[in-house]
Length: 562
Image (cartoon, rainbow, N blue to C red; front, side):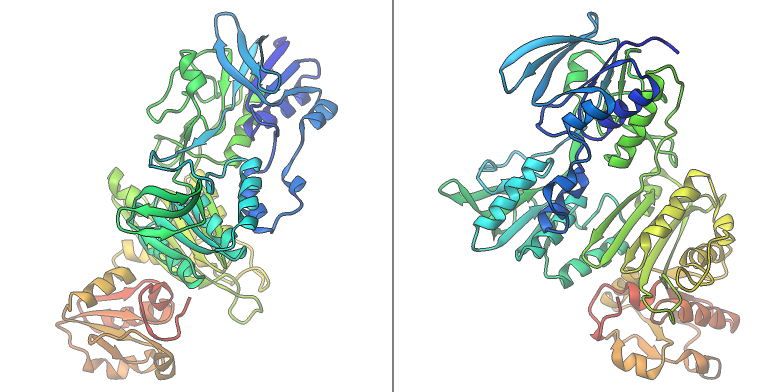
């Protein structure tokens, strides 16, 4: 093992502490110094919305290990409230300032680790400095937000940005009694993560929970009195707000690296190789300040994720103590709790597949996470994107009250291992009624896509059906549910016709063969079977609505499904 005496780590979020802890396990004699410009290290930043909501308490539950514990348990010197000003690569030292004592000095290193994370993107709009306008990055931010929540009487809040933090904070503030409005410049919530048909279901659920969505609007300013915010101004209206959370994204904190002359990527990330080594062989970088290889596309992507940062720290520690471990990349797994819905994605979306130029196929199903008869069964909507030429799985998404994330994790494994949709259709998943149905929703999804690729059936998205209705297209929208189901919930459109599936074979002669027929039911299964029946009877233009009413995001007569 190479004799490395002095290791300096810049950053105490996720990657830095993981690096420090594993270095000590691998090298019991190295001198390890971790530098953090805050008063806390190694805290659960992803838990902050739940701390604000009151789900996580007390506050110290967020602290994984403080500075004194690092010294006691791992013999790591942690310099809190200390800023690294510059990196002197030639001299193998860093110039730092103790922010508490206002004292500057230098520290030497043999190996340096940059784990500076990512900083919040803050829009340059007037009066963003008003009290009550906040970002959420660290524990003190959360403390201040909680203080403001307890101060204000008129509980109105605006969240700028409908990404992961935005939707998590919407739930947190609703739990604290606020009327919440989300302002999003794009036309969808979680737009960077989900295709529109999945995103629309999330948006519908947010609105059902009382969240007001202002999509396609840009924040232009904040208003206030006596130095406190009381309104958010968009390019279309002014919204009352006694509290505002700005969560429009993050970017890599790479200023130190750039000023030190290290190679910087096109996204502002610190360039690293497979070993997480920078352009300087004695400096490594990991966490949110670097880009990662996307295993699906082979391109570098930003993937701000605490899980990835911890993996980076594990690998960096091995490599600066004489190892030779590679980081293989990511499949962009992400999940979020949105009130009663579980939401997840992995790989690439259909939109991304189209932009890249894949010849692709998609499928969408609504399925229970457990057998319908078993107590606690909940519904979920799953979508998959596959390469239509070789069947390789490219991506997947899911939403609903059911156990969506289990399925996203299966797809993450499948994509990482290069599995095809044929392999997924026959994957030997566990089955017992308390845990799963005999055929998992992923099995149904894989079989659907295989049948679509083979030309056995043609699907259509609910949003496309809505567009056809709005255009007043001349087609038949065939409902194959029972009369009782149709009385409870139905789509109000002149194109609709009702023929229950059990009598379809004897009554299909009422349907015009020259017209397009779109079949739907509650969740898609009966519609699929009906479409096959009609095709077998030589109806030429037949489609079934994937996910059917479960995925229908527009108004219905009667009781909504999902």
